Length: 149
Image (cartoon, rainbow, N blue to C red; front, side, top):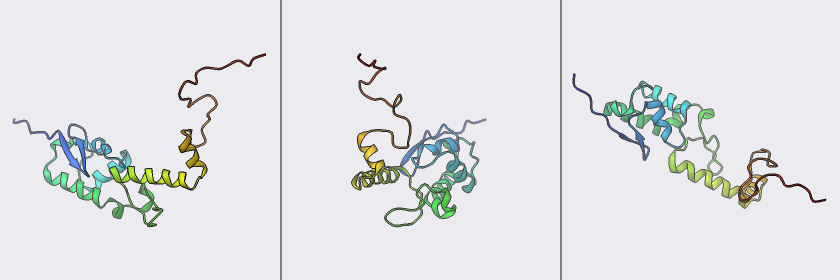
């Protein structure tokens, strides 16, 4: 029996995915795709999520690429990572560098309008209401200091 050739890198959405991993795990290598989304993408592309990505034929990989491209139009808006874009108002799924740029723009906009979250981002503190008295210390802050009598 002849051993089938494996592709170690599969290119999807300007990202090199690990061909030695299962499809639903390898797809999480694209920024903006988690386990839930990768499972949906593999089902929509009619590909076994547990199959090794590097062993898939070119037709299956092409189906995965098409589903990733058309993902935002194929699922309900609550499944998207950008349900209402600030500038356009449309719902869309962002991947890779587009997602990173959008997050960076959002943080810069919050800094510019001087909202609470923007100020916390600016000062490098916790943003989502976590405690800061004992955890999240950075720099030379170590231990507890006793009060002087």
